[in-house]
Image (tube, rainbow, N blue to C red; front, side, top):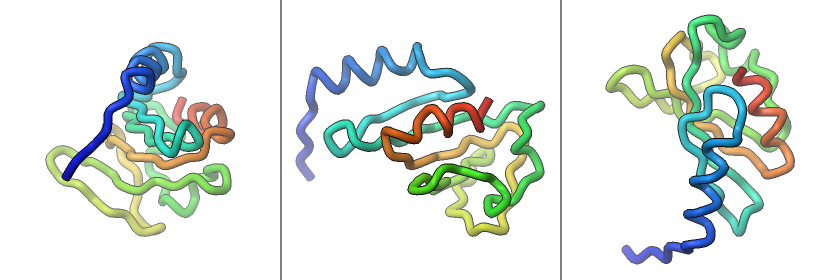
Length: 105
């Protein structure tokens, strides 16, 4: 497999990691900046703890694509519950980033 790395996008991603609010661990811009893939840590006091994915009110066109719990990677259904310490892999469009980050706080 071949991949093309853009120095501009790599630099932007590095800077964005430091200016994004909440518990965002990593952030990758894709689709020419139209979408982002976020990895976020669920804190102990997060309102998400104990909620099923279907109960999380993400913006339209945003989704939780994976839950990382310890060494386990879960491809979730709407009935999976979020636990403290989980890492969530979230796919979202650029215009929904602030809303998603607010939910993760």
